[in-house]
Length: 344
Ligand code: ADP
Image (tube, rainbow, N blue to C red; front, side, top):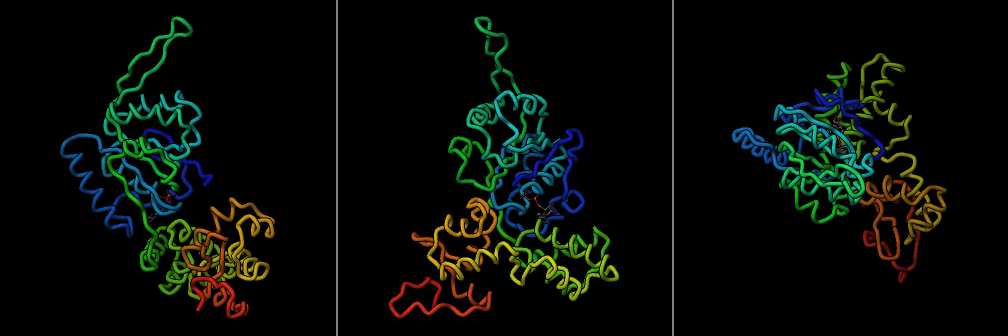
């Protein structure tokens, strides 16, 4: 995820492509009810004690609301927020301005926190635990270490790869929340609300269709909605009917399950060239003339989740659902041939 969120400090507003659609308060958020209920208790208690919230970690795939939670928490707490991202930090000194500028109860949000270099991560330990950092003043034989006391702040970390966080960093977060994918009903509600924010008229059936093709992810639903709105304004009378939504999504080659062209090429390669597998991801990537990382990060997670592909020790395999979806007859691999676990 190459997005960078740039802070502007004071107001917590930042250069954010999603700003117009991003909920600003927790009651504006859709879904994630359990997470919201737990956070509201923590926020309420922290406000009553007039203390900073405990450090928090949000994990989950891109576009599910990690940054949105941080933004809403800052509004609920009525404190400042600084937003930054792990890869921007090269050395511990890069963290110092963020930590020394932190005010009591203010929020420091670090996206992609698993990408902090080890030295930077270790520098965070005392900052998180004791609100203290050590800085070195002077050089050579005159160099002296000074303890600098920080205001009690809240670190909110977000990660798509919780497994890559080191144990010591993970343990320093008092609150850890995993974000789940959204149901079609929840996404439909998001699409309808956001259509109002974008001042576009939309039929309920069109909102449902956009949601079904949005991979259970609010950011994708927002992007699809913006495209369908553009299409409606350019090719129709501006109203998003079911017919307009279908035509717009077809033009982008997004199918009924939300697969795009690259997803379908992956499946076609798997069944057309590798006879449904098992096939190694490197071999598939090579045949498709794309990179293994692109397939692993951007294509496979959704295909695996949708049971259009299964992973076995010998490689990726198509399922009965793959053939049904692509309307291709499954190969006859013979009675004794090894079959995908989802094959009947
Ligand atoms: P992440 O930080 O997990 O990658 P974001 O918080 O940036 O994802 O979410 C992307 C967009 O999806 C937001 O701008 C917002 O419009 C929308 N969104 C995410 N979660 C919700 C939610 N629970 N309710 C409504 N909209 C949401």
